[in-house]
Every structure is written in C-alpha cells, then in structure tokens.
Image 1: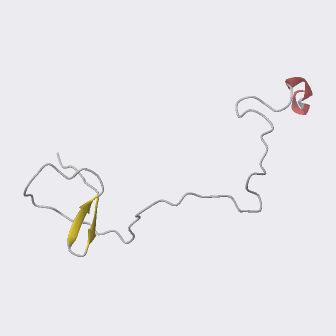
Image 2: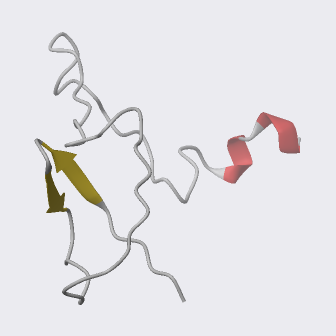
Image 3: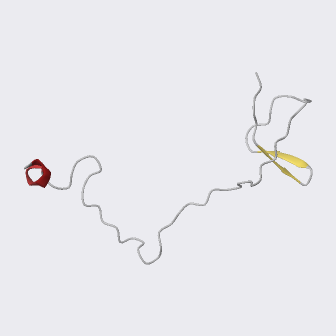
Length: 73
C-alpha cells in the first residue's frame, strides 16, 4: 500500500512536516501545490468588542423557561 507524507520543498531540500518515511532510498512522485500553508492564523475579535461578550444561557438548555415559550401556547 502506498503511503503519503507531507513535506515542504524549499531551495532544493525537502523538509518533512511529520515523521520522515522509514526508507533510505525510494522512487517518489512529487505533486506541487499552488499555495503552501506554513501556519494557521487564529482569528481574534476586533479591539472594539474584545471582552464585552456576555453569555445569557447554556448552550444545551434554553435561556427562558419552557412556560414562557410563545410557540408552545
């Protein structure tokens, strides 16, 4: 079975992103992707709203009691 290994090709050198394959010599097929993602940037809130959020209820249970639900009446 064939196995894939992720690497970056830079200046004639291959840099493995995970463990290198356990071989000393092998025939390879190289597919060059248009863009290389070197790191994932984490999204952050705008400075104007940072720290101003307020949780009104639990993600599992409703904010208001079931007796107050308009759609159940």
